[in-house]
Image (cartoon, rainbow, N blue to C red; front, side, top):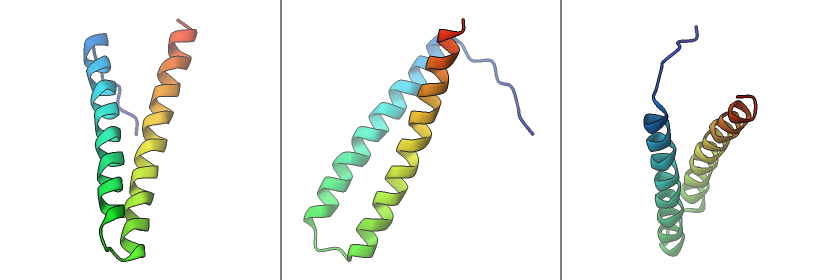
Length: 71
């Protein structure tokens, strides 16, 4: 079931800014973890989580762009 939530443009912009900040932190954390002597499976699992987050964030950004194109 879909829920419609009305957000202001400022709230949406803030959420996208937060998503970009999280993306940067995930990249930095991945770099730190890669330098440690971690099992390869652990780093691979983190990379998959990071990739899933990135894909979802990119999808939302693209939907926003498509919505702006049609406005």
